[in-house]
Image (cartoon, rainbow, N blue to C red; front, side):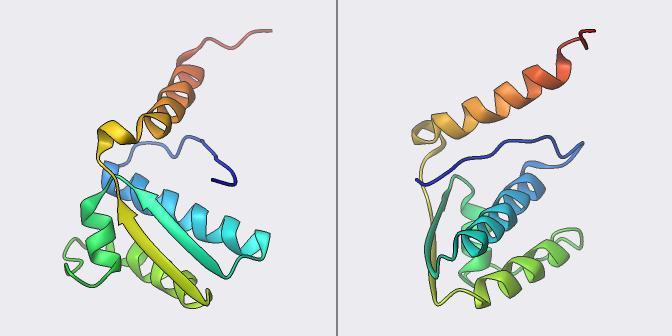
Length: 108
């Protein structure tokens, strides 16, 4: 792992959040000048849609899918795979930290 990032995206489904994370990863890879990238997440749906195993049926997901595919075409080589959510505890911790920060009262 080269880096990590967490920020709030507002009210969204977990699938939208997973696509947004993938898009952020693609953008980060481009900024770093990477041309070979492995994306790892815990969303089997997103991985299978990106790999062409599943169709993207939900209308709200289609633009995110198309944007991801466009970004992936700019990389020389990429792969996407999943790990069980239990093995992705660090990502869950980042989400919880961002949510805790959003809930904290503003100081000042």
